[in-house]
Image 1 (cartoon, rainbow, N blue to C red):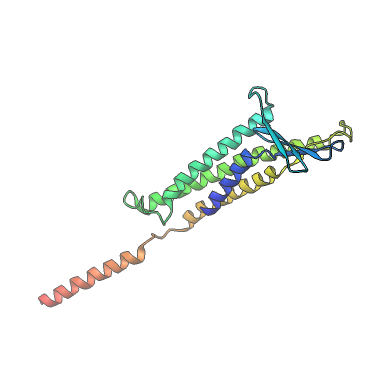
Image 2: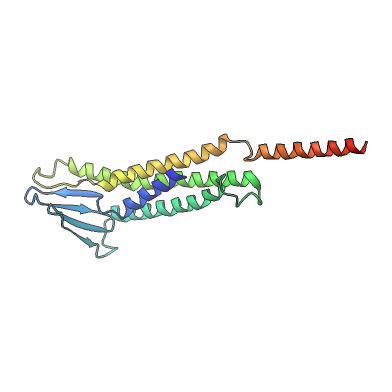
Length: 207
């Protein structure tokens, strides 16, 4: 679950970060440009940074629209997966009165599956934007003097977040499929032994 939460925070940082793609020009070496899902920024070497949000939603390219939709869907599915998986943890006692360990195991598996789906949804837009950057960077039709977009820090954060979401989901699913023992079998056996011992003493005293 800790890996799950950390991966979801990485996906959130990727979504709101403007550093999806970066570009620096030879004409203005003191300035670089950054492209994000919600805004574009101009960064100066002296430390200044100026960002501007996109003016129109309908005027965005289809790539940015698709990336926005998939990243928001990844965050929503990941949050739902965490809310479903937390009651299924062995440390949480909320479901023991309503179905026992079987209900907890089912909730944990569902949360893990949602985590895997969230990771896949996160990896798709990040990998697609990186693919477009590679295609445009090695395009022979574009002169060499023309600046090109390169990978930003948000892409690496998105890859890490999506991969960790998948890992966390698989860990939750496999931990439930491999564990077939009740959380408190030892206490139940001790209680049964104590009851048997008490009943045997009562019979001995009666005889």
